[in-house]
Structures are given as structure tokens and as C-alpha cells.
Length: 102
Image (cartoon, rainbow, N blue to C red; front, side, top):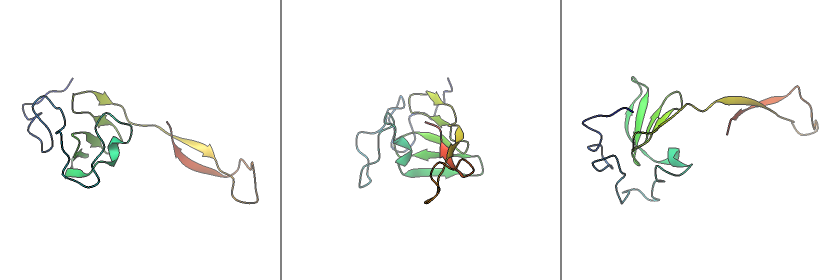
């Protein structure tokens, strides 16, 4: 686990990495423990380093990996190809669309 002396000093976080009780945004940002955590607003962006800090304390990386407030790391999400059928061509496997693996 990666630790830092600044772990609890980020805006929107308490010592120990727990997210703050109240989000100042409306509507409120999702908590770090829910699947939609990536929808939280960015409070600090460092594109030159490849990461951003979200309001809920999650650090997201350019490769889609995440570091949660408690120190738990989530690996990058894999992308996959899924069949796509344009209107009038049901089941045509020659057409594909890009889909995120779940």
C-alpha cells in the first residue's frame, strides 16, 4: 500500500483518508465506495503527471486505474470489442463498436 504524509490533507478528505461528510457541490458528488465514484468533480488535475484528485478523495489515473481514499488500488479497466449492428443490418459481425469491459 502506498502511504503519504499528505494523505489526510487533501481538500475534501479527513485524516486517515476518509472522505468529508459534506460535498460542497450540487448535486453532491458520489462517495468513493459506489460504482459511479468517477462522476465526482475534479478538485486538482495534474495531466502532466497523469492523475487527478476527485472531490470524494479518489485519485484517478490516465490509464483508468484508481487509488481510493483508504489506500486500496483498483487496476485499469480493460476495453473490449462488442458486436454492433447498424439499423437494417441485424447481427452483422463486420461492424463493431468500442465498449468498456465491466
